[in-house]
Amino acid sequence: MPFTTILVIVIAVGSVFAGILLLKQSASKFELTDEQQQKIRDREIEQLDRDQKQD
Image (cartoon, rainbow, N blue to C red; front, top):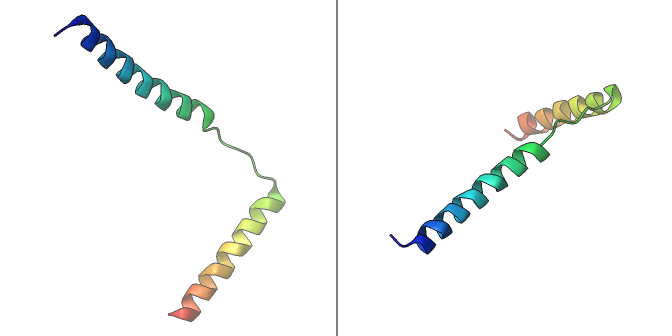
């Protein structure tokens, strides 16, 4: 295998690996206030009720 082919493969694999690491690093958890969490729970309950009424 020529050197340039190996180099291209290493760069391609490295780029994919770097992209995955970048996504992992940027995917941080975010904190919600109690009020926001309550709104989410309320909307979830509301949606479940709608779904049950449709069935």
